[in-house]
Length: 140
Image (cartoon, rainbow, N blue to C red; front, top):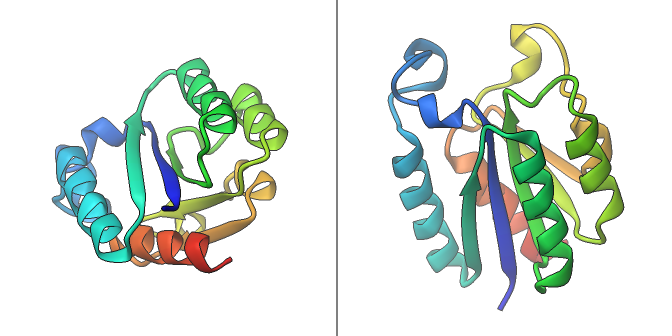
């Protein structure tokens, strides 16, 4: 069974509480529930992880290298800029990653610095972007 780590970056715990006009009303627990439903539908094992601390996210990425994880899906959120530890971790592990965003962050000015170290990206499809990323991880 394909094993996928889904990482929610800095500020994702505020989804559904602030920026509702941009990101919608779903909260992080609702994201996780929907992601788990998608995983069940696709027949993959998924682990959802969130932290506002860059080093904790890097530790999760490094652990994925050793625990048989087949793919990483990351919504860096607040980690879109100035995250050398996160970028280094993604670059070092032998686990293909996909950057996902509910909206298109380039429409809000600026591009993610995480994207160049990811194999794929999915932007602007809402929560369905996680389904697309999982499907891509299975078929890639």
